[in-house]
Image (cartoon, rainbow, N blue to C red; front, top):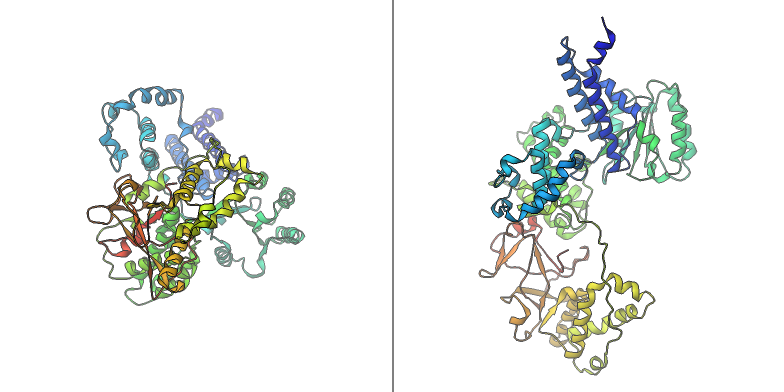
Length: 637
């Protein structure tokens, strides 16, 4: 029997293993925490050889090894990566010279004749490509074409591409199982938990220790901080000798000490087989590469998507827990709670459209919560913003009502919010155009004015602010960075000279809430209203531009520069309507702001960047637009 010939028969498996290893090492370019050593990778390789199904026929054996190894490396990599669209798929690794030439030359010449009908489709990646592109392009080149015209659909298209070429299981990140993590670990490889906001694996790790017979005195943990360096090294030395489990929490707080921990791990030659080191840390750049490369990395982050979120939640609910309550509706209630938990977590990826304040909803919130308790105490107790609390209340009314879901929409957003989320963020602004601002304003006319209007009060308040800017030592730097405020300064000068404008450009004011407060104060002085019982009422007018307005209103003022996000405005019906396709933000018509006397006033001081609350007419229930995240913005950024 020729050993060399038999060994050469397994070269396809070795080739696949080499490709997978270098693919893992390239992930360090995405995030410095993604470090893998050859030694740790060989452990995964050996684990895959043992796990693969044995076969007598060589090509069947090779297929089993390659498939098992590929999926094992996929799980190994996904366990230690944040599963999101920015780093789960790297397209540029598959580009060759012909592909780049196709993007630069071919698309540049032919893009003018591309089909607008295909571009306007909600899912262009699922429709046949227009003209001759359907038959002349490979599947990967179609991805590049989609990247040029509809960047918001690239992630979905790449997901379909991977699913079609490699299988459905390669687009579904594995659910983190602490038992499988323990099975893959060794005494020489520490387990590093890369924390995400709101995550704490300590409780799950303690449950694993109890199940594995390492509870009580066999499980040691230490919260790292100043003065704990020597204590941690002593606990490590004892754990290595006695076969204990050691958990070091928040190691990112002692970055310099981690070098000593790395040296201590290198000195370990013959540890007790039962020894395990568990480490929790935030993602940091200076984390020692030596620890990362030999460790098994686990990212404790909520899965991306409702389906994966629900699957992760149910994976931690045992059958005993579901059958513990004999009530027939208990399982339905658990399902609704799991769905609600997934929704409130998924809203976070939509930024300010989801929540005004980012919340760290965690698994503990789900498992502690029952029925009304989770609304008012657990989830509701986290919401510090009254508008966010209103969203939670609406979800409760929707999910714990009659369960009448006629149509399904994720998080109750329309498709435009999905487009906004899928468009990659733009890069930093690198080009600035410097402009010189006016050096001086004349306030003599303001001082001589006998009547104090809202504008005059606001201008007097702004005088000191602008003077401090114009005459400070950093005026050159200010003008270089804030050239966009030139229009605001021109408008400011015109208002000083000409008096109250017909329409106030609200987004051009330095502090718009000060002007609105001054508007209420002026109305209170004029009508003798108590200030604490006065508020603002708004109504949208039929004016599209300032030129259509003939004069100022008798009471209040007209304001412009407001943009509606999450909805559109119907001029004929005078109410909110659904957004048009691909129209993320629309300009609101001229808004009339009227100070009124109210017997009951609610003041909200929690909203970050909140200027005022506007009244917008709608023919639908208010909860519909609450879940849409409808808001008025002073700019389109």
